[in-house]
Image (cartoon, rainbow, N blue to C red; front, side):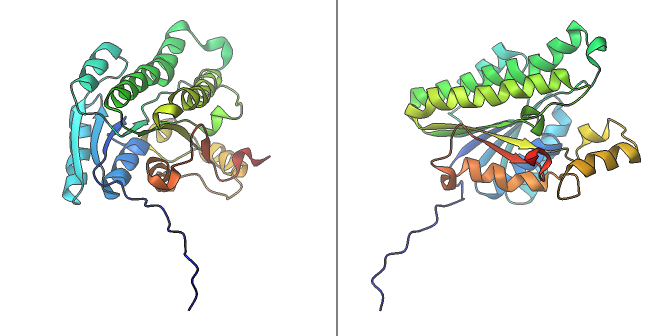
Length: 257
């Protein structure tokens, strides 16, 4: 008989951990919350629309997961800070809430800039600050996951605001990985390609535009929220214990060339 001791695969389970997911009423946020709950985490779903986020939490509980909901506009950074401070620390934070206002450069106004950067960068920054602060005070490890975009890695016409905001998120990921590493708080990003969600459907893209998008994705199809669920669970779990400061690009090969 062999005396070789085999290494054991780290667990992807999240039992006993608390997770906060923003923009969790639908799309990628709902998928993230469902995936984390299925892996055993107790998930607090956060979104501005109360009935939507409550319905999402109800659906997770109906499948046997642990989920609660809170109606919260995270651009109100003061209220968000109070909410986080009043709760037990979250071991996992998924910063998913975001906005896109596609426009040519010449048509972008200050209100567009403030809306995109206010949610995608400012709100994300301060919610991360709040969650990380509670973890550090409690001496607990954690995993912070920013939902970025392939457009945090490449440019695109008529997307200057969104691209700039996602490049900021990618930079924030690296900076916080350096700063929070000594506290065993990991910070990573997931960068999806064009993904079928209620937000992307609202763009009303025609068949020609969709074919153009598919042509840039080497695997020949647009993304689904299910394509992102495994990446999120991986980064949240002990299987990614030495992964921090990176961006997991789930883009079907869009950025490969």
